[in-house]
Length: 266
Image (cartoon, rainbow, N blue to C red; front, side, top):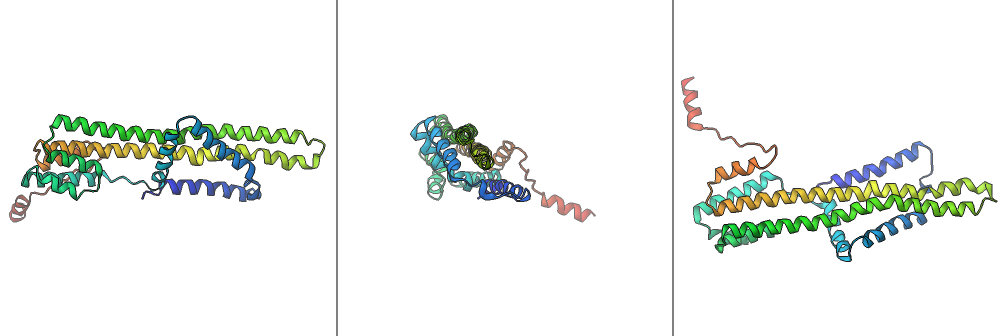
């Protein structure tokens, strides 16, 4: 699990608490149920209204992934593909069916099964590219849902403040209570801004980033599997896949016989 989102959100809210404490204010003054119910409830409601119920369900399903999501590093994927290429070179493409049984990744499992079944390379590429595109589209739906909520929340907070100020104007005859009432009125705006910038927008950005990493991983697997089907040499395949990854470390093999000769000459 990558704790970046959890750490970021916790530190962000902790910074607010620290500021309130340093200002010698009361934290309870910010934890008012009425504005929080309005901001969170209405934001989720208009988020649902801006799309479809299916979009909402997709976003809810993707929410845990924003906190627990983890993508295998490219080098791990490359090592896995190179290992499969070595087995295919030694035992033939039919051995990929047995390898598919031991794979947990549904995308890779289907790709290996299609290789074992003798699916044409061009057809397999189209199939895998379509699957990658479908996954990317689904991920964009969830990310867009939370990002749209980040856009609605501040405005809803302002609506809550306007409603509260209307109540303040109704009680101008009680000047001793105007200060606390005005302060409470702006709590809705505060929670609108906090929820947008500390929750919804970061979650949307996190899901987009995870989607990008997942698409990159699936693309590596696709190119690797297609190269295996074409009979690519494992070492060259590994170098090709590493070339597709930004800043991927190059694996250099030491020529032991040559190194031994240099030692003897010394």
